[in-house]
Image 1 (tube, rainbow, N blue to C red):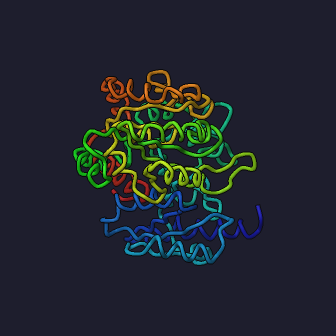
Image 2: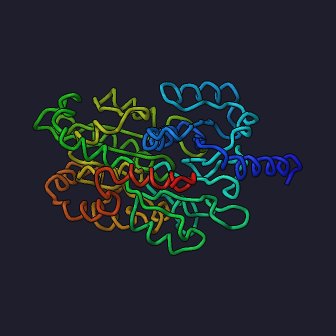
Image 3: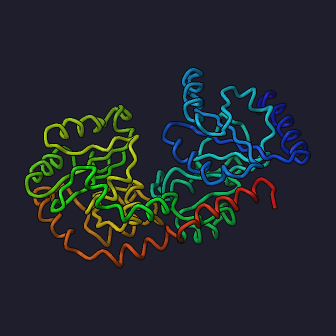
Amino acid sequence: MKIYDKLLNHYQVFFNKRIKYLRRKRNILLYCASDTMVWHILNYYDQVKENPVYNFYLYYGDAKTGNETRTRRTYEITKGTRIEPITNKKRLVLVPLDLIVTADLDYEPLRYTKDIVPILYVNHGFHIVSIDNDRNLYAYGERALDDKGRCKFSCILEANMRIANVMNKREPFKGLVMHVGAKDGDIIEREVDNYSMYRKKLGIEEEETLVCVFGTWRKESLFQYLGKEFLEAMGSMTDKGYKFVLSIHPREYVKYDEDVEPMGHVLEEYAQKYGFIVRHPKDSYIPYLIASDIVISDYTSLYENAILAGKKLCLSYFPETSVGDLSIANFLRNEIKVLRREDIKELGWHLNEIKVADFSDILEKYRKEIYPGIGVYKNRVKEITRKLVGLK
């Protein structure tokens, strides 16, 4: 450890272990590594912002973020909130913190550990993806561990009750995983009756079947795997009573792998050609999901939101190693239609089969895992926060 880091650690320990007991207010740092995390950080803030005891601070960007970008985005994100922007790490260490909240596994620029300040991981979506060979869920792999092999976090918020129960029995996560339910659960629950309203806004006729196609990024994702042939097949069905909404991860609008061509702009081209509706990354998914009749998805978090909304569902093919062995996707792929390249030529037939199928039992089974009821998510987040900052 560098001398600077040693001195900084002593300084932080003094501020955060000693001085905080002399204060009545509690200081919460919201760490937002990138634009992908913004919604999730602000969602957490929305759950606890009403408590006058809390002061909120926001630090934006990772080690590669330039100062100009950091400053601009920090002020944009905090506008209209009671979150104080912090753009300089030197100023940050002068704030005695009671809690750090992060939506991603890495918070390297901060140099804090949970031994000094409690660190709460609020995630940036349902825990589905696996990025190691052991099929560990994203939040429970090696990146969640410190150099001593311990979990980096004081607490992990978990949407799925089954996953929380399993992980709370496994070291080094034992006792650190709290089931809170889906972040969007209450939002979707309140919107499900607005089916007709959203269809009218989107220009969907009553007799038309609206299909939402949700894709994430990487080589095995939906649009990468099914390709242009799939877009052509959907285009051939637009005069047969079907309308399509296309939605893709923001990473697919830029080059992220020298062997993979991004599909974001391809979707835009086909939308102009066939009249598809494109849901852009910054647009809320709610109107499109609620208005839909069928959802086609890969392992993006949006397939679990489709479960919450009670939508008939079809998955695109992906290797089983793409998802964790505890994820809903891992089980669901054996229970519903999985669309493969060879199915594209009969897409209309498959969609008609999905349209008349009964999904009620499957949807209810998995809905129970991720939605504990109205208001539960908010109340649990508030309670967990109070405990972490030392309030009774």
